[in-house]
Length: 520
Image (cartoon, rainbow, N blue to C red; front, side, top):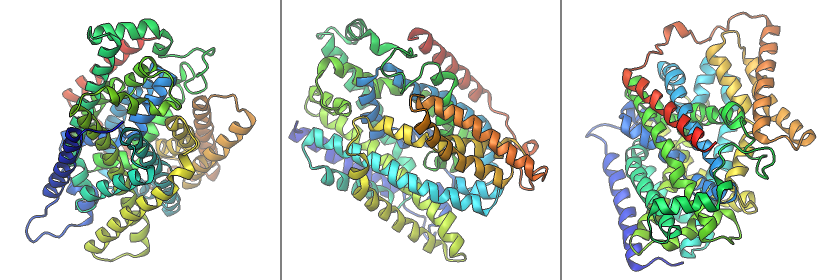
């Protein structure tokens, strides 16, 4: 498939416009030198709409658009549980986690771990997250993004990755988080409207021009197995999404880790003007998450009827773009690239934040603010170079990259969630107890993977989490230190939320209940 001149023109205008807006919002006031708070936390000035949009833009990338569409093609609507359960997870993060983090004025998640535990925990987790972000997250976004560009335009994969990397650096390297977050509203508008229009075109095509209702009716009638939200043990995909575990099991652990303790996600809420502003942004993001399956999963299901003989499921979304008319195809292509580069920018900014504030500043204290910002920019650039070089060896052989990423991260997330939850809500958790949970997670996950391979990975995540909590409690009690000297005093944290946030919570719960009752 080739883009027409009109498509290319639309795309070029988007690229130039986004870079121009990013540089405009990144300008400094006369006489003000950009410091680490400006660069890494946008000067704690982000409004709710920027926080909500940026949360979604950082999250929805090639990993979701290409990967989840591919899983929709192969598995069906059940994969949407990752999106829909994330909505309620966001509400929990906003009410119970964000007030604790903002009270401590932190830059990074490892910084919180030092405040709560000790320096060892901070360094171990900082190094761990740097490895995951560079070799798992960045590589996945670059590889899947380049795959999409290759399918749509025929551009070589390596050239596609180079373009994506340079584009993300062009609008984010100078301005940092402020440039990323304030331009993400543009990215999300493109993503939502471009994705909705692609879904509309696919359903209208299936409905033989009779509209989306007729198309959706045809889709559900001819492919009823693709609309089971809770898979039975007899399903060939049960190992990926094991029944009720998506509602009451391991998916909670995956989502809490991703939305609550993941630096490149939580960083934009750490940059909020206030707790209330951050919570409004999180509520906004929760409602957008409810909408995402229409954009990232439904096209994959529709592709089963439109292009049924694909070599790989991850080719579903790019192939669907063939049905778009000239001009609008360029707009949807721009929306796809917008999602990719916004995630790249968010990840590289978070990599530079963790490296600079948790590792470099610890080894080289007392340097100027300008120096630390310069180091952060260099790290962003190097992280992308490393990810480009390792993307193909790490991901080239997988046909469902989204599922691969979930299973890989599932080795570590149980311990991370145990480490944070016990650190926030149980005062007797010691540093050794927390480290036992974090390290034990990988060991226990590997043991279960080897000795109980038929256990669905999501069930494994839930089981390992329980064991990690037990291990942390045993080790902490065995040390007989009582309440940790750095324990979080919950009496000092204000967990009260506004009536608007409470109404948003009710709305999200009711919509989720309706969705699962309908597609059970």
